[in-house]
Image 1 (tube, rainbow over the protein chains, first blue to last red):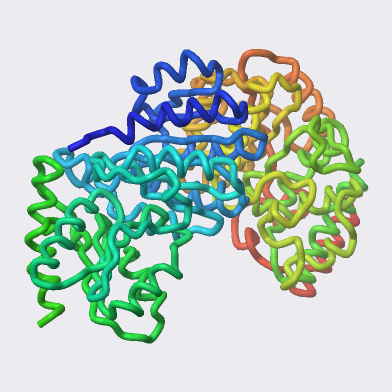
Image 2 (cartoon, each protein chain N blue to C red):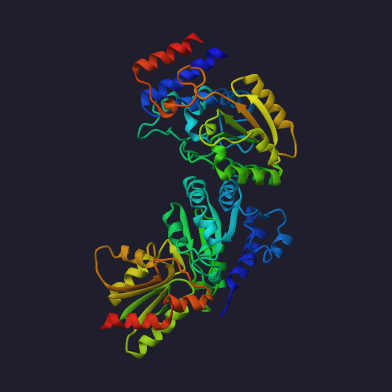
Length: 307
Length: 261
């Protein structure tokens, strides 16, 4: 299990970009200062560990965006997104200013730190704003490619970096902003998955295959813009679908997919976070097991779609 | 000068009365400040709102915007037609400025506590780029109750943003509900260079702006002592007039008082 690999990739990718593009300015909120030590040495005067004041860090970076910089703002998801909701909405989105927001600690990644450090809604908040793009890369290569391909476009980009990588190696050519990745073809069921849970989704697909069910598995790293066409095409073929994600149910990928289908009904299941605060501690895996983000739960419920 | 200001106040009242929208007392409170900024202090290229050498002005207390529109109009940066269309459905001017629609307006402010934080980003960028443009922000003393104002104050001091001048429209709106004990000392304690001025005396304001402009290494704040509703006796102070639209009789009385000045 590859923990913090994507977070460590972040300064490397942004350093490569910043060497070529002098407009990059990185602002962190008292986090990841250590992993940015090389960046700080090489990219002088374009880095600030600003302090513990997330809303103002967002507004300030919007002001920098207005004045020619490409701000890259980084800290822990609940403080960066939920605490700074109005600053993102007004200072970036209303002004149509571009920039890059990168978080760690989404969902329950800070598992033992409790609910104050959880963030169940970051993706739905960010996708609901105007002029945004939302990415959830769960491997280093995805992060690297998606950031490089989008950092200078006209949108405010949100990158949610999960603590644990799914450890699946994609080919560079397969990774394109706004495009899903078809991991397996199938005809009986569509499985849509975003984030670290891809590993469990692959195991689910294998287990179903032993029951004679051939599932199509589609991995989604770009939450907005969503790859509507591939999703609809797959569901029209298989007539059933399952979604798997570490996000609150309301505003989930599952919701988005159902909205795409308009009034057409298909048998489906959504595995999301519970509609409740997660009061457990322990490791990431401990919490996954407690709240049913695991193979056993996925399999037990999915197989019922075929009864 | 007084005559011109009374004329501008009449325009503000006309715009608000005709449209049925707007904050007259807040606009009266900041009129002289805006007039000094746009006619005597800010470097603006009337031919190019995006001029890279321009000074930036941000009206953080966006609800005083009718005064801003009136001054921009007098300066020739906003048409009469736009002003008379204020708050109509397709107008570019609404009750809070929309920077995506209005040339020469740098930021869309309405929700208090955003303008200064946005402005320190601009000021910091200009410093990093070694540019000499200045950034001026106008907040209300009521707005100084917002926590983000003090987050920004803290950063501005630490980054030594001496290209930034903040003006506090100290019309004591905040004191009606949650008084801040000695606003001047508060700003000083955050490490800012402070100045105090009569906010309706244009020469005193300009004098303080010039002094503030020359002062290096620190961000500067001018506490501008103003009167909410300045110029019309029964509007002055704090009460129902904050967002009230005059009826015909009240309108006539306001115009009469402004004409008598």
